[in-house]
Length: 238
Ligand SMILES: C[S@@+](CC[C@H](N)C(=O)[O-])C[C@H]1O[C@@H](n2cnc3c(N)ncnc32)[C@H](O)[C@@H]1O
Image (cartoon, rainbow, N blue to C red; front, side, top):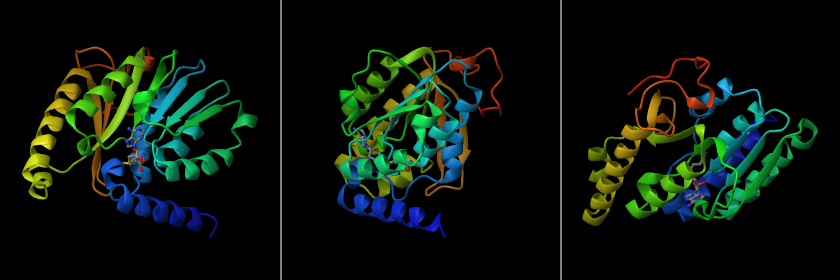
């Protein structure tokens, strides 16, 4: 019974925000545990020293809970979530994690990620933002901000729903179709430049692809966060 209520609360809050803020939420349901597992997978292959992690667009914290479980004493997690209702939910989730006793720091910021102010770069960035709901200029600004805040050996992970642009555009007006086309081209260019692997997750609504990226432009090889080790499970190239 203990797990049923949080599951229901999470879906109820998510749905209420989908209905009132679809433009920024950009999804019809929270991500599935399997997508969360794929997103957080590079943390299994983490360095032994303390690391700094950034999560952007945490929603009801499906990825957050998994990130927090992977952290060890000395690690830090910064969360940027622009929606105040989600932030209220996240602050309760974080309080329940007993982080102080584990020596893990976690800071929640209820602001747009473009206001990210952090001198020290992050080893691992998890992005849950709905890029396909934004205009291309906003996508550019966010990608630039995030990549500027990634360490040279860091890993940046985001996901994309596996709906073809053709299917998506069928439901859009002409102006929105043009916006989506520009955003798809921008994200495609980013992936070609930075992606070193990806994983398809069918068990998600809708199915999604986790994309693993890093600085540099050869688009091949292992995550630089820990390039002296093989990843725990091979990442599929695409
Ligand atoms: C697709 S939902 C993902 C939620 C969660 N990560 C998941 O996978 O279930 C996108 C989230 O990004 C947040 N968001 C949208 N634009 C944002 C921005 N500019 N800065 C920070 N968060 C933003 C939304 O409020 C929402 O919680």
